[in-house]
Length: 366
Ligand SMILES: *Cc1c(COP(=O)(O)O)cnc(C)c1O
Image (cartoon, rainbow, N blue to C red; front, side, top):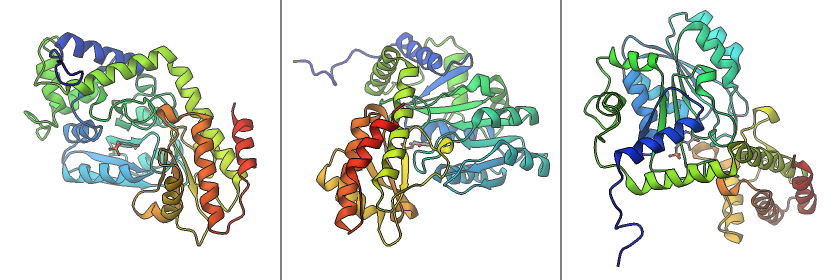
């Protein structure tokens, strides 16, 4: 008897290329799109190691935990790194980027996270892209948490390296990921003696041995199950329509924000300004004297499937994340989270209004 996961015909190069083309359409890009055979950290790291070196001066924008990681990779490549850190409750502005260029005209690389699922903020990439393009720096963007939840337009925004993963708002697999690469970025890599070659991290390998050869022969056996899952996920996204999927995420974010405010109990949106709150996930600050990880654990005990988590690392004490993405980008998922959070906060003696929160979810939907 054949097994649906195990006894599969090999994934052909043509099918692989067709999946790449569908992902490129999703990004609305004319640039090369490479599907990498690993979780999104693979192209995130590969793109930095491919383009950065001792001659690079990088402006590394830190609006959450990933920015820290990018800075470490850049330094490891020998780049001079100028960190621009903004508090996690807000977004970076185009003016801050402009000011950094004025102070350090030698900047030739900018790394930025679009939306941060971990901190719940989203950055104005269109405006920042204009500033970066005017300056002429290479623009690297982590769009893993924004793709599917809000517009991601690498060509219109002048993004040279745009990394996405399917595991968040696309509702797809985590084991493969993609990056769009501009001509400028390829040229930077080709000129970089430190760019990985004959390496799992290498984007140039894919350029030289896959793209330049007309995408006829794969470099190695692809992660077949993950590729099929990615294909299915893009297909499902196309069927619902990207605009509808993004609308669902935006509605869920607005509902979660309005619902949390109505719930009370001292719970507050972690990101102060609504326009800086990411559609992919809503982060909440618990009141002083309450431990967020305990509240989240209690809420999950009552309802184990809820898309709820405490913040990562040092944020575990103060932040709760409502991960309303993928199939959870619905008012029902948001209501489930708020109900369970309300019960957990009430247990701690806090005054909450669950009914009011549920009404706000319905009213907050646009
Ligand atoms: C989720 C996410 C990634 C991918 O990392 P995992 O934690 O392994 O899923 C990368 N960048 C951002 C901004 C993310 O939100």
